[in-house]
Length: 504
Ligand SMILES: Nc1nc2c(ncn2[C@@H]2O[C@H](COP(=O)(O)OP(=O)(O)O)[C@@H](O)[C@H]2O)c(=O)[nH]1
Ligand SMILES: [Mg+2]
Image (cartoon, rainbow, N blue to C red; front, side, top):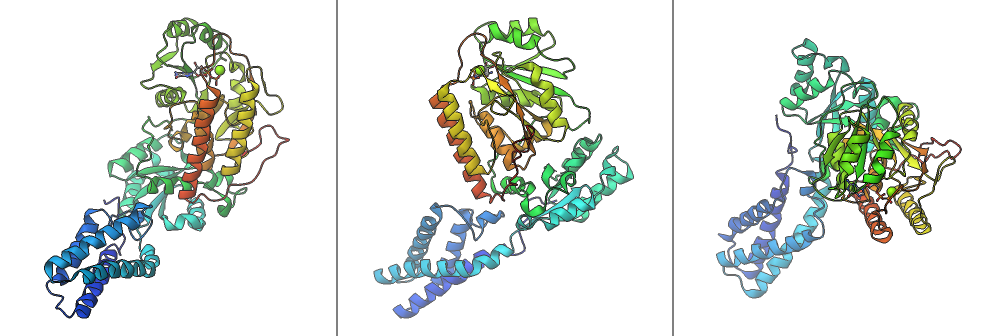
């Protein structure tokens, strides 16, 4: 089964190039009073070949007839020069005629692309999706305008077909994918936790079809409160994945095995020997696991952690920085709910149930905030507070969010959100990145009041100005990305009276 399909009109672009270069060549030869042969058809073929070698006729929409970035006009002018030069080798063109051919072709090429472009784009390949979920969800996706340029739901598979392999329902599900030549299977998040779905995902993958998870807002869970035109959910994610071949896909284990809440606490720690024991001893009962991500500590952090919490799982990061530590820690998680907890004593483990409750009440991402009623800080300096306020404002303005405390490290979310945040920053900007990507993916975000205590011993690793600028860089980078992928407008709702208000 072909995954990257070319649209039916992929050959039209080379034909347009061939025709327009031939017209330019014949015109110049006629004006110069010489025969266009053998430069026609050899030189136009060389031109099409050169574009082909440069990847201009690729199968991705962006590579055809469209946006190639700022280097593209220059590339076209250079290829046109090669074309004029090749022509002059084949027929006896004078200097002015060569120049005329070069400029003439650049002009004709620009005009023909402008005229043909919109028609060619209509022929771009559109991903064919098979949805695992209810027919109603498929209807919502079909009604969602921004998705239409990228994907089309061609069939639905009922979620009941997730039972054991070999069952008639499972075989039928695979057949649906075959019959419709689907490019992708999309699983409605209402069924993301279904037992047995893992087997179905494996089955789809085994026949070479990529599988994606549909984020909540476009899903039926919120059908009443969200109308398709106001949602920034799946198209953003899917379009991003389509438009950005370099995006880092999530490679961790699949955790959609159980509906029961299994809390995994991820604790990044670097030289926290004196603090980590206090923190771990305060952890509430009933956790699924606690994962320590050691930042190559030079002190006895690991030993202190093992002593205080013998069942702790210890991993070491390869790179440096808190962002890198979380990437390592998240990949090791086996629970379905992740809590991010600092090891220096500033985050109170007794607040964990508050985060878990917010997630179980329906949020995808529970974000701690020191600036909600019931929250506060004993640890924040005035420069950091000012910086945090400015950065929160900048993020909210440029991303349409309503975060009250952008740079705070105490957060929790369902592990199923991991594929949508693919951490690719090393340092303290990691929280900002998570916040913005959660928002961009259309996740339901709730803020939870949190009190930040003083670090017990030692000094913070954060450098206010260096890390402030890194956070700013992350805000701008993510905003540019949103613009590139045409992020739809966010829902504008924030109920300040409710501490667990949605902040998207
Ligand atoms: N593994 C790991 N943990 C880190 C690193 N940098 C900071 N941390 C941990 O992240 C948490 C917060 O860091 P801290 O220095 O207190 O920064 P602040 O709370 O923002 O002032 C603490 O538990 C640190 O030990 C790192 O590079 N690697
Ligand atoms: Mg700290």
